Amino acid sequence: MNLLQELWGSSLGRKYVMAVTGACLFLFAVGHMVGNLQVFLGAEPLNAYAHLLQSSPKLLWCARLTLLVIVILHVGSAVALTLENRAARPVAYVQARYEGSSLASRTMLLSGLILGCFVVFHLLHYTVRMPAVNLTGKDFADFQHTLADGTVCPDVYRMMIVGFSHRLVALFYAVGVTLLCFHLGHGVGAMFQSLGLKNRVWGSVVDRAAWVAAGVLWLGYLSIPVAVQLGLGKEVLP
Image (tube, rainbow, N blue to C red; front, side, top):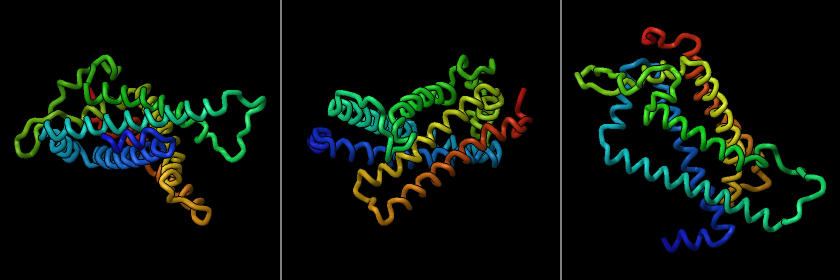
C-alpha cells in the first residue's frame, strides 16, 4: 500500500501505474480474443472453455475483482495526469499546436471513457445477461448446453450467435472494437515510453509493432460479429 501511495504521489509514478495497468489490460484483451475465437470451432469447444472458466466461482470472482482494480487504477492515473497537464498550462494556446502528436494520442482520455461505456454494455449483454440489452427479445439465461460428459452449462455459443445476429448490436461492437484498437495502438507504444523501454534507435519499430498488434486484435474481435452476420451459427437461431 505504501509503495502504491508513493507511486501515486508523483507524475512519474502515475505514469508507471498507467503503463503497467495498461500492459495488464492489453494482455487481457489478447486472452479474451483468443477465448472468443473458439466460436469458430463450434458450440462444444466454446461452451466447454466457458464452463472451465466458470467452474471455480471463487477464482473467477478473484480475477474479476483484480481486473476491476486494474481498470480503476488505469483510468484514475489517466485522469490525474490529464488534469495535471491542464493545470500546468492554464491558458490554452490561441491556436492548437499538434506538431509531434497524433490523433490517437490527443484523444486517449476520450476514447478510454467511451470504451468504459462499451465495456459496461458488454458486461450487461453477456455476463449479467440482461434481456433488455441484447435487443433480440430473448433471455440469454435460458440458453443451456449439455456437454459431451453430460454437464449442463450456459450455452455461450448460442448467446454469441443470437447476440451478434442483431445488426445494431453487431455494429455497436464493431465501433467499440475499433475504438479499443485505436486506443491500444497508441497506448502500447506510450507504455514502452513510460517504462523507459523506448529510445530513438528503435522507438519507431515499437510504435509500428504496437499498431500491428492493435490491427491483429481488431481483425480478431471484428471477425466474430461479421461472421455471424454472414451466417455463422445460423442453425441455432430461432
